Amino acid sequence: MSDLIRMLNASDESFDRQLSDLLAWEEESNDEVVTTVKEILRDIQRRGDKALVEYTERFDRRSLNTVSDVIIEKQQVHEALQRIPVEQRAALQDAAERIASYHEHQKQASWQYTEANGTMLGQKVTPLDRVGLYAPGGKAAYPSSVLMAAIPAKVAGVEDVVLVTPTPEGKVNDIVLAAAAVAGIDRVYTIGGAQAIGALAYGTETIPKVDKIVGPGNIYVATAKREVFGRVDIDMIAGPSEILVISDGSTDPDWIAMDLFSQAEHDEQAQAILLCTDSAFAKSVYASIEKLLPTLERQDIAAVSLKSRGAIIKVDGLDNALEIANRIAPEHLELSIEQPLAAVDKIRHAGAIFIGPYTSESLGDYCAGPNHVLPTSGTARFSSPLGVYDYVKRSSLIHVSAEGADELGRIASVLARGESLEAHARAAEYRIKK
Image (cartoon, rainbow, N blue to C red; front, top):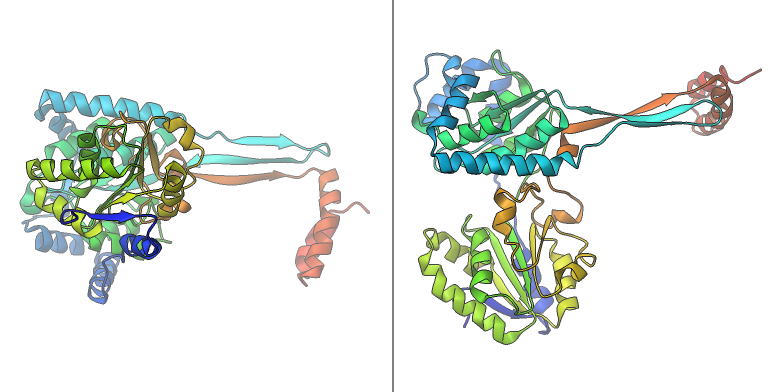
């Protein structure tokens, strides 16, 4: 019984290797893609708007008169909000309010303190000037990602937030524009691919250079983000979506199966894993998968994901499950157990923790409030969800008094001369009281 999803047991001698094989994922990349992306970026940097128009016409099958044809101004953005169904408009606005409320709690204030000798030290927190958001276009439209990327930037105080999104054959996705309107984005550029990343990173005659680029895209977009990192900041290079569910058998197996599907339906490389303390319940979840999978619109995608990268793993109790969870460091972790709060402190590595059987991961994707842009592929060991703190920078403040210069200068002099940096030492010594 493992045609749909592999069934593993943490007690097996070969489990460690099996888990390593299950988690292994090499980011799709090849020399041809890298070469193509580098050529596009160089061309954008060299020829600006002219190159941008040519690539947009070629890759998005559009006919453009000038670069102004890719610009959607504030009025048009807000008109899209009125065109979408009332139910969608209300849902976007409700979600935006919750996302903004949550991220307000992340705001950081500048601070300082004064030492006894009059020296003041501190930190100044300043928002970035301009941020560029990338949103996939066409059929792969994710308005929720627009909200998640733009709203924390606005909460942080970023003045200028622009959105780029491709419009294949000139077809604009109204719900993406509507999300931009709700999130406070006033200008949208209908460009995509590596050329859009280049335009944001280098600037063109029409599109201003940004300080940071945020948002998901295909392999060309991801490669371009990696190439321009250092000239601008980026959020992350995201891998396939992941969910790890820990269950003690107290939750309806249909709920668990659907939670696994919620990630498996993203794409064939997505990963859905269940850690289960009860063998009989593991079989019940398998039966639910068998029953419910044919009911999904994206059945074919979910089926490939579950078979190639999914697993139901029988574990030896909750502690064993938590140990494995920390090894996996999942993007999404559901604690679908009777006493979930008691387990939270034992989780060291997870992008987002969904606590209790009523907290489906999908609520976090859309409207709970916390950001759904999360670290994947085990990077939750050292990375955090996207947040307000990603849209600010911190400057150190140092205001040394005359007395402080005498005290600190003596320390700096010794250390500088120990490093054979004479000018450093003498600059400090000039300020020491004679």
